[in-house]
Length: 181
View 1 (cartoon, rainbow, N blue to C red):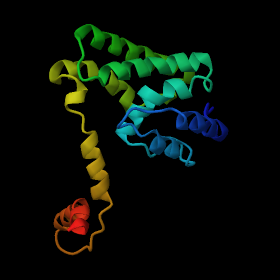
View 2 (cartoon, rainbow, N blue to C red):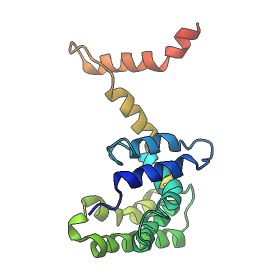
View 3 (cartoon, rainbow, N blue to C red):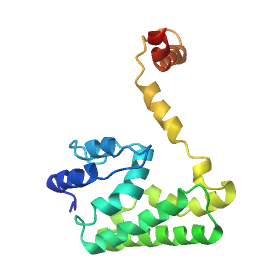
């Protein structure tokens, strides 16, 4: 059973549209994607981060039943800790416990069929942070954006696709400079 109907998604958009976000956070692109009929299908990783950390606690407050909201907030708490620029060992342990409880709650609330490999992988984030430091220092959200740009480059099918793609990418990046000159 889907907890978020089309009507609820529209209500969520209205609430989110009235939230004043800090500089650098664009809630508009997120809410447009939520209500586009595709739900959350086409959100990028950084949009997911903004949705989870900043918008969802407010927007879902009057939408989800309390047991589901409390369960979701375990994920939000873990993400807030793990996506911060600095993280201590005790904070990391807290985040790991929040993720563990979130994953266990998925089975309890929705059944074991809901689990996907990413739920298992989330149990290894603690070890990754211990090995490499905060994810903030090595996440690749900017590269994801550029991959999106490169994916949309039209190629002519002749020669090396890499050359065609990089030429088109450089043209699109420097278009403003060309227009200005």
